[in-house]
Length: 293
Image (tube, rainbow, N blue to C red; front, side, top):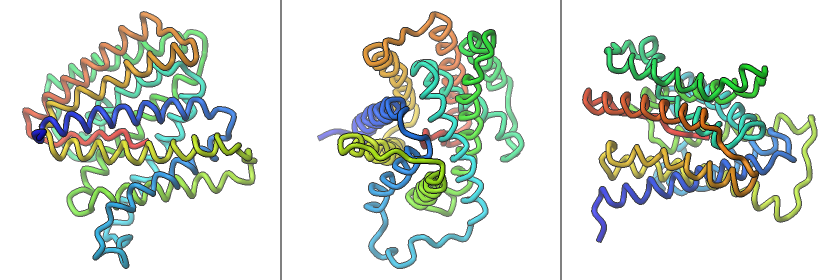
């Protein structure tokens, strides 16, 4: 019989695996319009969420007293997910994953304005280290005017506000309801792109496109369950396993070899995130940076 910490550890590993496989499929889906892939991510992502709705809430599960905050959370999430999808199609997998680790850095800065939090010297040091890491990773793109490097940074900005909104919403809203509205928003945005031309997928591709949504939905649920069962300080560092998966799949599927600058920058970004995370634990504030793609 596994302990709660061991179960949390297992759920986090499974969550990282699911997110990594989803990223691979999103990168693979470059022959299909972004809007079409978004629709599958949102619509199929609803399936695991529906299993979490309590039976007594079936008739009015969608009701909320905070529609404006849900709307703001969805808009920020849509900006983030569109940006990361574009980035995954145009940049090496390891590069995108490395820059995406900077989300806690931007969330730290935004918490000053949205949550009126005071940021101490340790977290400002972490922010500085993290930005140096991002600059090192993006430097090749800056020098060659490759604007695709801006997309994972936009993803970080969007996810930073998402984390803050979830922190505010979670005081009164269940996690499944927050995820439900986001999946609906993704589906609607995807459907709006139909006039711009969708591609009829083969049966095999249809299954893989559905898997993008299922993997994303399941990964988020596993992530939440991991935090619920285990000590956050134990399982959160496991998220950085996604860089190992990104390097592995990037090399064997797309023949991508990460540069030493990417690896050095990733190390700095991870270091800064760990510093921020440790300060959150010390100050006993919940760290709510979910990947939510």
